Image (cartoon, rainbow, N blue to C red):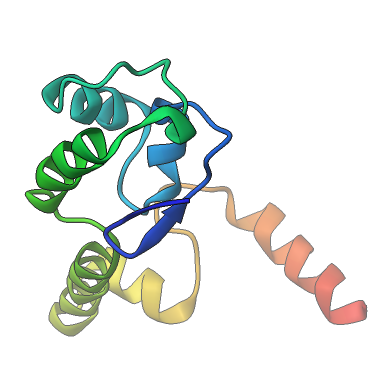
Length: 115
């Protein structure tokens, strides 16, 4: 397995798909990374040589991914809760933030309590 930023990438997958195993890298960013590193996106990870892996590591090293991205997200949520914004209050109480219907959610919570 190739190891990029502390994550083992599966060898049997194509490069564009395998990079999505890293938190913070989706399909479009994976394609951009491979294009910038000059590696074919359809090439399997097992076919990558050391030069390809090194160039991908260099490109990925510039991005905010994995632990750094997770900690930033948690800090943003904590900031929202500290300032007492609507979204922060919803985070604190464990309710949905983005306009889900409240009635359905309360029904689901009641069902969970019965189990």
